[in-house]
Structures are given as structure tokens and as C-alpha cells.
Length: 457
Image (cartoon, rainbow, N blue to C red; front, side, top):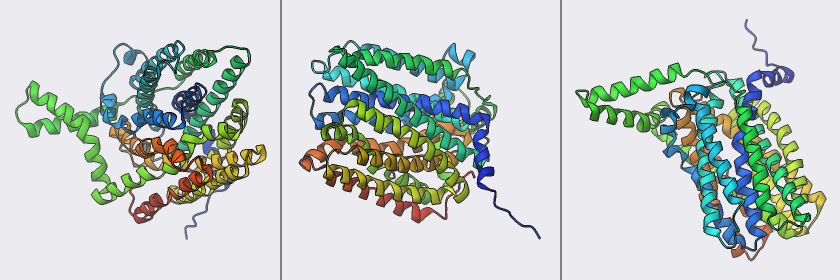
């Protein structure tokens, strides 16, 4: 008789010692860092220059770019960057190009006064968001391609390491940004944020150096499969000529990934997946968009925010992301999604308590710890979930599509977060209660499809 023995916790944890996990950690950091530039750094820069909560909230619409990067993901999957692709690879060539664009934008920001040039500041922020969203397409594809298609445990562990890396880039980037800004402000520099953006440019350069230590697998199977799809379309179009070749290339590039996704899951299940992905993290986004503004209004300094929200929050995120990865490995990614969704809703209520009680460093620390714990569990489960859904023939496009749909809910709807606070007359407590309720519809979608999903596990 065959006995299936469940592996121990220590045996499950060994998957994190795979050398590929360090590379995935670095890729996550490269992906997360730009968010601190157009997130908390831009928000505080505008806040300290006298702009309103509503203006800052609507400025966050630049994040909506992440919701639509799937539109050009097929091109990223197929087009090679001249010169760079031959020397560093297809994926890395795109990442380096986008990092260079972000660096140029930071240099331009360092020369601008936001009060006098708000439209220009937001326009440059939009360019950073576009470059970052484009970079994410290739970062996610390169991360997924580090792991074999049916290595379920490694994929979930890789998702955890990607999340740790993302939060490392975001949190430690925030620590650098806030502390540098505070330092130059105390030294009497009126343009302390502009100087800070130049310092952040140095971090961009270091990210590119680190990227060179990540190998890029040869895309033989992917290229062959894409070519087969293209040839099949061309045969249906009739005799080969320049026009049919162009049409078959465009159709294979844009339509192929979508057809593959719906064919694999079935139409009804595919629609339900997209609905769940869109709704899952809306409440977290509403909280995150206004959190720095809330901290500032309740009386915390930039150094306090850097210590508790960024520094302490990073440590908490790393620990609970790794634990979340283990939980997903041992209990399954679907159960992990349910648990993390409930945790997200529950921990948002701690910020209501902080709002109603007034400034309290202890309560601030507790709220940040539990919020980051819930966010860590939710993000690692979410990343593992959509990573297991993709077809390796269209890795970048399908992951970008799913990720973009998730981002669409977080960015387009959360842009009204500042207006919601104003509508509530600054009642932060009620605002955070509303963000807790927002997770419920997504869990209903997940419950409807949980037994019908086709995952590469």
C-alpha cells in the first residue's frame, strides 16, 4: 500500500535556498522601486508644496498606465531592442532601456518647481509610469521563465521571493527617499525633493548593474511556438505575400495570447477569473493611495513614516511574505487567496482605530505590521495564482494582461480615494471601514470558480 507522507515545514522551506530565488528577489526589487518614485515621493512632494488631497489623489491616475500595459505587451514579447538584445538578451535589453528612461525623468524632475509646473511634473510622472509598466512586462516574464512550467512549489516560492523583492525595492526605496528628503530639508535646502530625485537616480544605475547577474534562458520553444501560430494564420489567409505576412504577424502577436487564455480555461471561467483579478485588491489600493497623506495629517513626520511604514514595514513584509509562500505551498494557492482576502479586510480596520484614537506611535506600529502582513500574504498568493495561469508561449503578454486587469481596479477606481476622503469631510475612520468592505465581491467570484480552475501546478 502506498502512503503519501506530507513533507515537513523544514522540507518545504528548503525551496527558498534555490539559487534562482536570489535572482527573482533582485528582479522584484527592480520592479518595485519605481513605485516609490511616483507613489509616496511624488505625493509628499506635492503635499509639501501646498497642493490639495484631491489634486494628489487625481495625480495618482498616472498609475492607471499599469492597468493597460497588456496593450503593448505583445509587442514586447516579439520586438528585439537593436544592439542591446544581441549583447544582453531580449528581456534584459528591454529592462535596461526602460531604466534609462526613468533615470532621464528623475534628472528632469530635479529641475522643476511643481507649483509653477504641475502639468509638466505629472507628465514626467506619466512617462516614469509608462517606462515602469513596460519594464514590469519583461521583469515578470523573466521571473516566470526562471522556473520550469510544472514546478509548482518553486513557482509559489518564486512568487514569494518576487513579492519580497518588490517590497524591498518599494520599502527601502521609500526609506532612502524620505530620509534623504528630510536630511536636505533640515540642512536648509529649499529644493530638497529635487536633490532627492538625483539620489534615487543612483539607485537606478545600481539596479542595472545587478541585472547583469541574472541569466536569461534561451527562448527556443517560445519562438518556435509563436512562429507556428503565425504560420497557421498565414495559411488560412491564402497565398503568402507581404500583406498576409504582416497580418499574420500582427494577429499572432495580439490575438494569439488571448485565444490561448480562453481556450485553456473556457469562456465562463476565464471571465470569472478576470472579474476576480480586477476586484481583489481595490480596498488595499484605496488605503495605500491615501496612507502617506493620512500619516502626515495625523501628525507623523517624514522620518516617522520612513521608520514605521517603510523600515518596520519592510521587515514585516519580508517575514510574512516568506511565511505566505510556505502557506500557499502547503495549503494550496486557492485557500491562500481566501485567507489573505479576509486578512486584508480585517487589518484595514486598524487604521480606523488609529484615526479615531489620534496620533499613537504604538498603534501606528501595530497597524503597519498587521497591514503589511496581510498585504504580503495577499500579494504572494495573487502573484502565484496568475503565474500558474499563463501559457509559456505568451508569458509576458498573458501575465501582463492578468496583472494589468488587477492594476486597473487598483488604479482607476483608487484615483478617487482623495475625493472620497474629502466627501467624508476628512473622516478617515469611515474611509478605512469602506476600504475593508471592498474585498468582499472578489471573494464571491473566487468561491464561484475555485473548483474549476486549470492551474499549472
